[in-house]
Amino acid sequence: MKVQSLKSSTAQKLRGNGLIHYRLIVHNKKLYLVLQKNDDGGHFSNEIVSYERIFECVEGLEEPVSSRVFRSAFDSKSTNNAGFLLAVLRHESLLKTGDDGKHYIQPNWYKWEKTTLALKPEEVDLPYEFTDWSANNAKAK
Image (cartoon, rainbow, N blue to C red; front, side, top):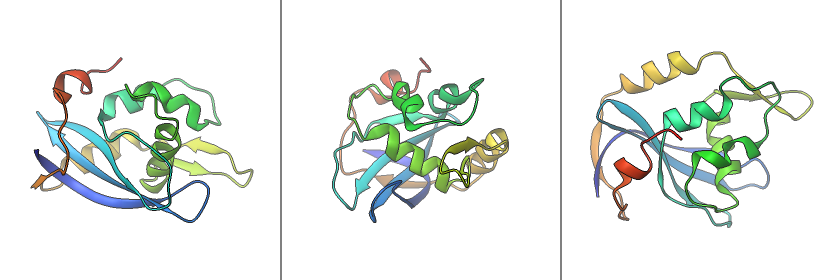
């Protein structure tokens, strides 16, 4: 499946030594994230998730936040999705781990979205297919 990729990167897992590989893509001027690979075991879904759905998970929440809050961003019920997403958001500086080991929302989400969408897209082939992803995963819940 061809997509317009803005960025491909890796994030350190919350626990363990492995890395989470992810990609940020743009479709119809909207931002999406897809988890692509886990270096150190643990199942996850590779569905495309809209930034809107991710942001809605933290909008208006009191801090600190746990990975649990990100479960609703995914249609799949894979248990590692939320924790892997939290690791990616921490890597992107949208969340910060405090001295107490808890995760805190950073104030730069809108600026991050705007800056990320301004990146030059590159057409890439994802090694898997998505069933009607723009209809199922692009809508905010």
